[in-house]
Structures are given as structure tokens and as C-alpha cells.
Length: 629
Picture 1 (cartoon, rainbow, N blue to C red):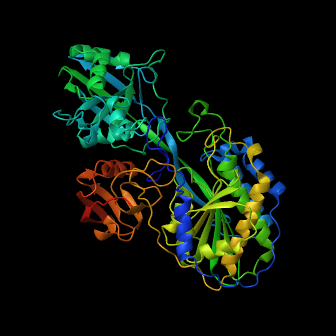
Picture 2: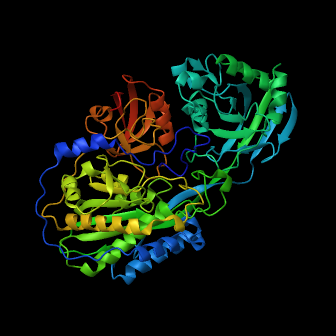
Picture 3: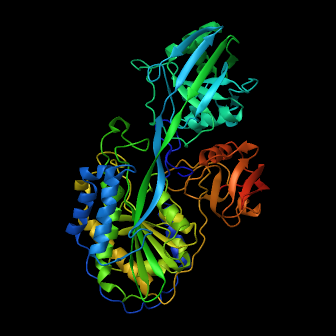
């Protein structure tokens, strides 16, 4: 996610799958509900609402997921069409514009990268030069730095420094100011030592790049290495691998055949060296002959686009208000986040993710619109852009709110509500508002089986609001096999069940709006977003606890904290919301990937010296890392 979050971990190249939704075990949540639920106050009389219309709802989903919308990807004409459609719907309902430009709140996002002139790679063997061909012999990775490096070359195996496995490809190897040649993936023995079937974080390309950079290398050349039967030595398509905007080091992939002479000059062969590393799980690093130099020139431009949050307001009798939101953007024609990489280039319609939630906001706006000026509190309807790029639309709004943040009493977020299975609905954030449990308990007539989660942090837009101490409720119907694929189409949406869920949600909104007192925000201990959690479910994972919550907006350098968890190691060290982490244990922190990598390499109990910028001035602190909880 953020800083920019444009490049998120890819399940093929990075064994850090996107932690989409945090859903604790139901039994623990029920115990929490029983322990803290309080008798509900009698709600104030409220105007009657109509029922959600499944046909209208499905029509909106179908329109948003149509080919004309081009998957609502940032930078496409389709997302602009979707924004104008939503603005027209809100206007037709008589809702007030609530953006900075009518219904729109524009902001700029990074959508990708492109290669520009002078992407060259030349080898020099004692004055004998050979130029490799772009996209035929080599290709840069999209998160490489731009620049030019000419230097001698060393081989550092898989580029792994895995203290937990007693393995370090850089041990005794001088790479300062040099170009490092690395293999893809990781030693075969890591799987046995980790006890996992899949790859560890050491296989991630961004981990290799950060590790090489922190050892002083100036550039990284990645080789596919030994191939399986029938496998071809294929260059990775530019832009198809996730990473930050700028890894802080030049990073290219070269075909095996182009590197064969380098190994031969050192009296070695690439397959034999790789076989030896895998057989013994021991490094086989070495320096290539001093007569070999590489000259690498990479020039990349980042691509930007202007997108819009679409905001509409239903005034109430006071200046307090409830936020009802959903993100309307999706993956466009696919990108590194696509879970159908062979189908990148095809429209990813995003019917469930998240035309389903967007259509829910539109339908709720239709139901509440006749009550304009009649409710005790207003309702701010939000259709947010940039969520798929890292919660950027919601991050932009909380940084530049169009209504006072302190008047927002709660935020209701709907992300993927269109494919309810077995009557089960997940509701997150239940512990963040003092009255949420009693309000939810009042809705007696629902046949849904709700799986309640106390915490308010997850990979959807409500996270931006809970970081600002606004209570949140998050409605989600579950993942499925069409998630982030071109097959997420409108015909698979269960509109009748979604409409029934909207009737439940509108009753919750009405209870919040008409309650005598606004819910008090409650801080719920959350899993550390930097802890390296790999589970997509109930909160398992590994790694020490730091205790900061990242600001899910783009950052030029460092990781800005939107919050620091009370009682956490970061809080005990005096770190605060708004601090920007720029150094961790002597290693530069340019982005969230750097922070995650540094934390992964630490242990519970380590005392790490960090540097943050506070009001633009450096501040040093010592943080004692604790056990995750």
C-alpha cells in the first residue's frame, strides 16, 4: 500500500500476499461482545425508510462493470465516465455537492511507469565491449531507480541474508560500489528450514533489491537461473512485478545466455553453481574477474493521472454527520495486482470489487434522499477513487476533508458486498464505536449470520478513518475465485441478498443518525501492519511488534505514521502520529517496503535506533521491539 502503494506485492514474485481483510475468530469476537455489550437506549423516533430495490441495485452494478467503464482503472476514460455517472445520480437525488469542485474532489495518483530513452546495458571484457538488446537480452524492473552505473561485478547467489536459517550470500563478499548478479527465488533448503511449502520473503525481488542496496551495491542484475523441463528463459514484462516507485537501486533482469560468458570467465557455470547452493544450502558467492565491468543505464518515468472522489451531502438538522462510503475504482485492464496475470490487458470489470459496494452507496442515497433536512445529523455519501492503488482516495479526503473531521460520528464502508454465501456477512470495526454492539444487536429481523470483528484496520478505505479516531463499521461478503480477475462480472452478483443487507445497513445508519449521543471512539489493539503478517485470515503471522499505523497516502521519502498504537513499542519510545520514519537501525527507510524489510530482519527484544522527522526536524529514538499481540 502507500508511499506510493501503487506497487503492491504480487503473489507470483512476492510471498507477502495482500492482507485484504482482517477477520478474527468468531468465538473470540462473541466473547468480546458478551463481555462489553451494554443495554441499548431506546432510539429516537425516526422517519420511515423504503426498501432497497434489488433491480435498481443490479442495474447500477451492471453499468459500472460494463465494458465502457474499462474496469474503472486510474488513468482510463472509464473511471472518468464512472465518476460522472455517480455525480449525475447524486444530483438527480437532490443531494448537495460536497467536493472541492462540485461533487468532485480531484487528486493525483501514480498509475505505473514507462521506459524512456537510453535504457542500455553494455558489458566490457578488458576493453572488448558488447551491447545487450532491450527486451531481448535484458529489461529493467519498473521499480528500479533511474540512473547510470559503470562498475565491476560480483555474484551473490540468491541475494539472501537469512539469519534465521544461518545463511548469508553477502558474508565475506565486498559489494560496495559494485554491480551484484543474483538468482531469482531462494535456496531450495529454505522451505525445509521454514517448515512452509511456499517461498519465504527472501525470494521477493524487492527484498533482494533492498538487501543489495543496504550492502552498498549500486545495481542488481537478476537471472532466472536453472530452468525446469520445458521452461523458457523469459524476461519479466515491464510493470508486471510489484514494488515501490523507487527501490533506491538500479534493478534489471538479464537472460541466462547473456551471462554465461561472465561465469565462464570465472571458471564456473551458472547451473553448477546454482546446483551446489541448492544441494548444501550454503552460499557460493564470488567476484567475477576484474576485467569484467557492466555499464547499466536505466531511465524510467512514472505515470500519473488525476482521479476524483465523488462526494454528496444530505444535510441534517445539525452539523454532525455519518459517512457512508465505498470505493468505485478497480484494476482497469489489469496490473500487478491481477490474480489472472495471463489475462492482463483484458478488462477487469470489478463487479463485486467494488461496483457492488458503490451501487450500495447509491441505493442508500436514494433511500435517504427524501429525508433531506429532516434527520438529526447529515449523511455524507462517498464514492472513493484510488483504493486499489493503496487507499489513496480516503487518505486524500481525511488529509483534506470537505466537512469537519470532528463532526463525523462514524464511517460505514462497503467493500465487496455482492456475493454473500451461506447468509454469512463479515462486519469489521465493531469494537471501535462505544454504541456499535448495542446498535447491531437491535437489528433483530435479519437472517444473516454476522461474523463480527472488533478491530478497524484492514486493507480497505475505512482504515483511513479509524486512524483519525473516527469509529468505523466495515461490511464485506467474502473473497471468491473471481477476485481481481476478468471473471468478476455483474451476472454473478446476488442482488436480492445485497438488497437485504442494504436494508440492514440503512437501519444501522438510521440508529446512528438519530441516537441521542454519538459513539465514542475506542482504540482496539490491532495487528501491526509492518509485522510481516502473511495470513489472509484470523491474524496469524510472525515478526516483532513496532506499533505504528502507516498513513495510506503517497510519500516522497519515508513512512509517515497516521497513528501510533497506545502502549506499543513506538508509543513507549515517544513516537507520535505525523512522525515520518526515515531511518531504522542505520538503514534508510524510503517507503513501506524498506520498513517492512527492516522489521522482518529484527527480533523481539531488539533495541533499534530510529530517526523520524517531526515538523521537518530529525528526532532520534530507541525502540524496544516487542512480541506481537
